[in-house]
Amino acid sequence: MWKRKLLLSVMVAGTMGAIAPCAQALDIFVNTPPPALREEVMPAPRAGYVWAPGYWDWRSNKHVWTRGHWERERVGYYYHSPRWTERDGRWVIERSRWDRNRPMGDRDGDGVPNRVDRAPDNPRQH
Image (cartoon, rainbow, N blue to C red; front, top):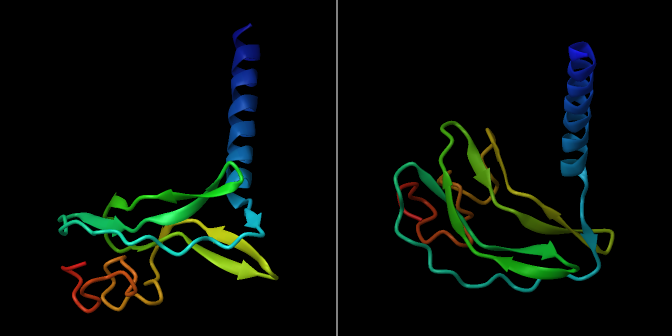
């Protein structure tokens, strides 16, 4: 009896592990470009955190604004904000991520893109 429960548990765990990566790999393509970014007031810097600026997400078949927030810093990694890109006349969102490559357009490497960074050459100010 216990062997059958163990086998069932292993099968369920294996299935969940196989489904999770597939769900994240799905791109969302839409025909409607996102609206212009909203102007947000960035709070004062917080030690050990990186500011994740607001962005337009896609939920319930429409663009929905998601406000900026603080992300706990990951030493040795750079934060890449979500962004929309056009591919073959349709729009796809590239989700936020952390990786070891400095984002293009982030001269000071603080995780805040130059276009919204109040001090793009100073990693201690955003």
